[in-house]
Length: 115
Length: 113
Image (cartoon, rainbow over all chains, first blue to last red):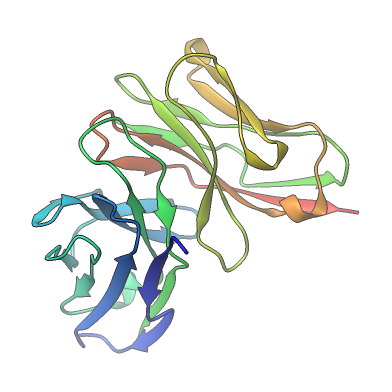
């Protein structure tokens, strides 16, 4: 089954404790992206990747890191989480990059709470 | 600056009634427009998209949307709402380079029997 998976689905952590949220897609998609969803703000793009080793900032990249060492995986790293990063996070992928935007396939989301 | 506005935070409709969800965008080039639906506890699923051509586009689950360039709008419609349509709906615009996407704040739909 074609899908985007995220782990963990739920995470409660404390300020300053480094964490990684994994994202994996099995569709051989070039493009991957991370979003955060907050009430009243909708989805905001954190980082995106056009292909392996090609990443760039979205609208709200501060406090986040990403890497794309393999085509299928696009982990989101919070080196020193803070309470304002408490949010619902979505990973998404689409088949092509660098041309007109295509349909994105979303993962189920990761709900992160930073105490 | 690119932006998407969904003026209705929450809409309640009766089952069987028609539905229109509003979306206005601001984008300096040809807009690539999307509507996504998010059911409770789920990720987002594409309903429909507009790239070019016919300004009335059909999507899944009986939804359609009309692109009006003069009004910078891309409103979503359904002639008869079902209880299973209760969800949150997001309008989005994609940059022509295919890298950045801008989402609206969403419209939450409640369907009453």
